[in-house]
Image (tube, rainbow, N blue to C red; front, side, top):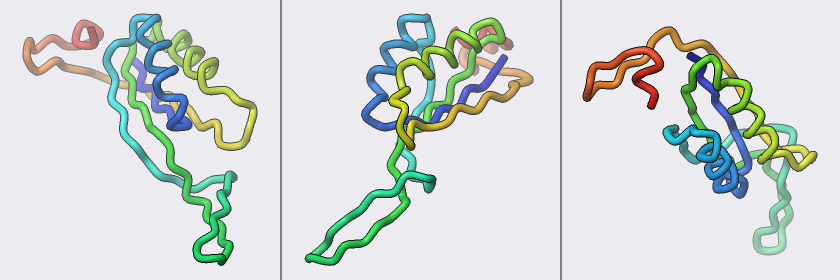
Length: 112
């Protein structure tokens, strides 16, 4: 099994969510995050200009079977790409085991 963590532009979330559902990824966790990176935003407050590199994003945590990893990553890449700084990052790691508490199923059976 693989854990796919994606940090994406918040405005791309609904598009990604629908695209993941289309390929059968119907369960994942997400939350709003703030990070720092190459993208900066300029702000003006009471006539004073300042900049910050704090960037609001949405982070997704998705666990899929090894066979579903490439398709899931490709869907995220395709739906979030703008070609501009700040498109985000995707991280893939290996999950040793997973359990569904309600049924006590383990492995990939616990994912669906």
